[in-house]
Amino acid sequence: MDTMPSPGRAVAITGLGVVSPLGTSFAEVADNLLAGRSGIREIAAAQGAREARQFAGPVMSIPVPPAWDADEFAALDRLERLCLAPAAAALADARLAGAVAADRIGLVLGVGAEQLKTWELDFHAGGTRVFEPRRDEALVQRMARRLGIAGPAVTVAAACASSGYAIALGRAWLAAGRVDACLVGGCDILSPTAIAAFYNLRALSRRSDDPAKASRPFDRQRDGFVMAEGGAFLVLEREPASRRRGGRVYGELAGVGMSSDAHHMVTPCTDPAQAARAITLALADAGVGPAEVDYVNAHAAGTPVGDAAEAGAIRLAFGAAADGLPVSSTKSMSGHLVSGAAAFEAVACLAAIHRQAVPPTVNLDDVDPACALDHVPHVARPHRVAVAASNSFGFGGANLCLVIREAA
Image 1: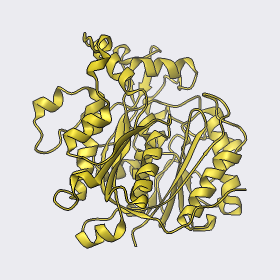
Image 2: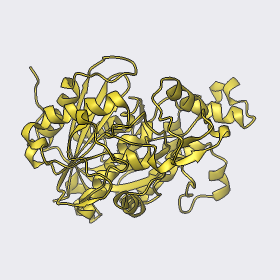
Image 3: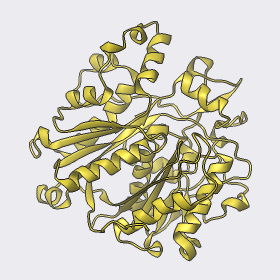
Image 4: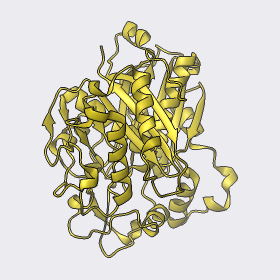
């Protein structure tokens, strides 16, 4: 029998940073999501394309953090820059300097296979780091040093749910009193091996007509996800502390639910029970009922099995409240940021709360009957959003749901 967590442990989201195919600031990402714009483009063979025309969601420009030396930043590898840019932005946004001691700030990074990706890109550029792995310290440690964080720092790898698990762990550290603030999030890059692996698993879309139409969650013609890159980071703090400092509060991380179906290494489980359980646990942790949720940001990446399984999980978890509940997949615009997806989609939930509008599921021309929900097709919908839930389901059965609530 499940033991439901006690509600009332919400923490404040006081800083935010994002670098993605849809922009490099909260305002830009929110604008593009609600306008239904796509960040998907055609990529070249040198970037790992497997087809004559292959589409992905690249980050076109990585901003240099303010006061950082541009040349030194440019010399860092791509994964480190894609992590540091949004992480530094989130810390600056929260204005923690001088307010929280460095050894009371934690860092939880969600990323998978970090060194393999770094070594691969370095090797293609003529480097030799792959032959000298002892030279490479963990990315999270390099980040902590460059960002001036002296509290606990750890990496979490849970496939496509990695950055969501990072957010969950940061919240747990705050609840346990281990830190006073925690920088949480994740990042991923486009790498030839990763693209080849997902392509060979037949997980990637093979569409070749129009990049903007390739990612088609919940659509009858979906044929896989479109891989993307980027990162997003949040600063979490106990709400009373952040209020006393007078800083901005984007919202509250009100609830977390996690489960594992351990069904298969790469194939989603068609039984929705465990995915639904993650949602149910998150709602209970937040102290909200199914009818109190105003929006669900679906994991839905555009795979035939995964989207239908998630639709079943949402119906099972929300019951009668699923009818009329807006559910959209922002991966239809951003592509799938893999390790960084959950954190980016938490930003999408905050955008829905701040703009009081639900981002659309674009390219949804013909809803698969197995996925039937209120998917907000094509165009954003003005809507009261006080409570949002965000699903992330990773390979290997890592199921996670975050509940994000507007600041009181």
